[in-house]
Image (cartoon, rainbow, N blue to C red; front, side):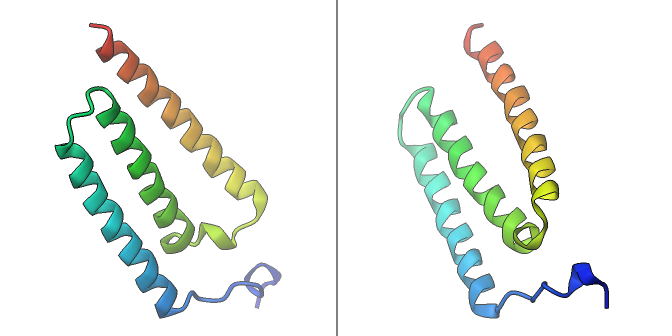
Length: 96
């Protein structure tokens, strides 16, 4: 067995079901926020919930929680760059 694989333990079913439940609750929150008239804040709220859901998926289902800090930092950098591009798109459409 490799030294990299020694510290990895598969997540328990209880944890995975809890994460799935949290994703279902966040999906319900997304639907609820979409029905509340908040103006431009609807987009902000939807993106915040989507970010939380993406974080749960990457940490637990893609096992990023068990990776080293260099790999976590690179994934974080990708998400920051993606957020910048999405933010620029929203700024462009908001001022048309």
